[in-house]
Structures are given as structure tokens and as C-alpha cells.
Image 1 (cartoon, rainbow, N blue to C red):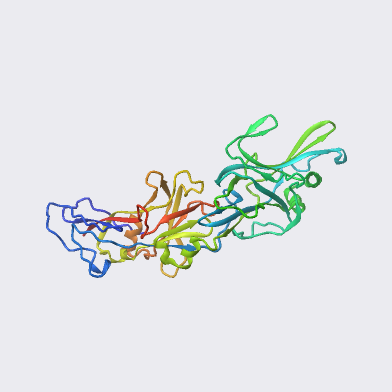
Image 2: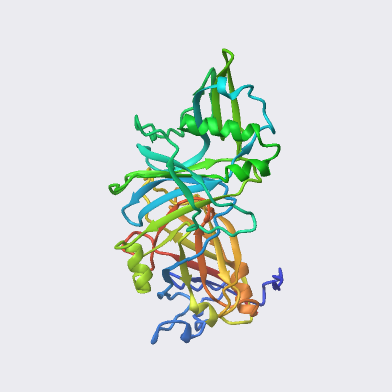
Length: 438
């Protein structure tokens, strides 16, 4: 993209500041003489006229757009759990993954003399979203091949066996995850992890399969993968949470603990970076404020929303097109305040990504800023749009507005409630532009 060089000598130019919430024009120089608005009256509501000391409103259009097909393969985190969001509705997350051998053709001796003590499917925590409470975890064997040639989306599923692999006699799948406390395993204290018990009959079958597998391909012919999910039923508003699991780590694995010839042993089935895995996440925002804004974009002027996988916040500012073309943009900052109470377990994303469409009618998006941090003190995101605005004026890209998303859009369940242009809250979104007129 062509960026116009800013010349240091400004003695023969005038510098202006525009505010999207309040257009304020400041002239740099010694003259106090009032000047006509350089943007042009057609950039403002009919009948308005501005001078260097004038103030007027300038609307931003804020709303929410849906996404329909987000790839969820090879995620940074496997997502597991469910919660009821009072604003966004119900969220339910699980995942599918292959597991492989930690060693080929292992020798367990006479398997008829091997006693299976226990079996545990463990995942290290990478974080969580929501509250820590009981959830009912389930695991099923996948019966169709998972292939790297396939594309898996957040709504994709795979066929599974009907047999539940977590013991149900003592409700062993009902677990309160603790991502804040180290896990005690034998004599060791490990990083926090979720440990799901697995049926010992299935564990014995795994040892038989492993002993007959000279490579991962042979093993995956016998065990195509696992589906890990929750079955929590109805949840009250603000109840539940989704856990971020880091699967491809040394302590994330399925371990069979067994005794042979009086000796206690164990064997690991591991999850490598080569394993095919994908998240399956469902969202039900029927009857919520989010659904209302999606169906009627004008409601986004009060509040508008973004949520991983399914919705992006959208901001349009058509009056940028009415700026003079013969100007150099020095600063363009967009401040996006939001509704958030410190300590809320459904927290806003620590970072957002900002993108736009290249040209009208083209769905291709490009990144305006890949990582904009959230300010806890200001409770807002501030985006540098200098390059974007300059390129719009130069004709390099069309002014198609901005899409705002949680940065980890396809690997978390984060969501954000933004204040719209007509918000009743303290702060509304605001665009400030400082430019030099040639």
C-alpha cells in the first residue's frame, strides 16, 4: 500500500483535529480568524456548519455481523465445558482428537496376567472462561477416520460409538475442574490439569491394540480418535464455564496404570502436534440481545457485540469519504469503550484483532491491526487507524468499515459488549483524526 510521506516543514500548512464523537477543528498558527469547515458541509448532518471553535456530532454506525463457517482445526486450545451467558445465551464446547503411541510395539508380557488398576485422560489447563463448578464430562470412541485432508469447522462432528467411556456407576464424570491448583499424581505435583477417569475394560483393549501396533498408522486404524464433551443439561444464567486445554504437552495424555508380576507400571498414549484435532462449539443466542441486534442492526447503536466463532462487531464511518483527498493523516485513533464490571467472570478479550474488506463486493479481509490490547483503566480498546484512513483517501482500499473480534477468535469462547454510538453509558465510541491540508 502506498503511504504518503509526511514532510517536516509545516509552516505553509494548516493542521486540523477531527473527533468522531465531537468534530473539533484546531488550527495550528498564530491567527485567531475563524475559518470554514475544510471537510465540507456534506460530511455533516444537514444544516450544520463548523468553524475552528465549533463543535458538532458525527455519527459512527455500530452493529453486529454473524459468521457462519470458522475453521476449528489445530486450535491453540481444545475447548471443553458449557455455560449460560445472560447476554449471549448458551455455549457448549467439546472436541475431537487423535491419540497415538508413546512407543511402538510395547511388550506388556502376558496380558492375561496384567491387572488394569486405572486409566486417566489428562489435559493441562491453558485457562478458562466463566466459573468453576461441577460439570459432567463424557468421552466416546470416534468410529470414522479423522484426516488432515479434511476441513473441520466449529460445527463439524464425527461419528462415535454409543458406549460412554467414563465410568458412570459412581458418577465419576462429575468433576469440578481446578485450573488454579497443581495436580498431585503419585509423588509428583504437576501443573494444573483436568483428569477424567476412563473405563478399565477400554484401557485393556488399548494395551492389546498397542502391543500389536508397529506404527501410529496401524494404531489409528484400531482407534481413530476420542470425542471429549460435557453433558450438563440446563444451566442457570452465569452458571458454568469453558476450559482451555493445552493438549500437545507432555502431561496431556491418556495413561493406563497396571500391575504385572507384582510391579506397578504405566503406559502413555500421547497427543502430538501431528494429531488431527478440532473443536466443536455450539452457540444458542435465540431470544437474547445479541439476536435482536443481528436481526435489526439499528439496535447496535445502543450496544453491539463480538463473540469468538460466531459474531464480529462492525463499525462504519462513511464520512471519512468526505475528507479532502489532498491531506496527510498524522493521527487517527478509534476508541471503543465497553460495558464491563471488574471481576466479571465473563471478561472481555485482553486483545482484539481489527480487519476490513479490501473492496466493495469482495469478502476478502485484511488485517488492520492484529493485536490491540484492552485498557483496564479506561475500559476500552484504542486502535491506530492512521494507515487505514490514509489508504482510503489515497484510493488504495475502499472504506468498508472495520470488523472487531477477540484476537483468539477460533480457539476461545470470549465475548465483548461494546457501547454503541447512542449508549446511555458514560463513554461512546470516538474517532479522532489529525491531518495536514496541503
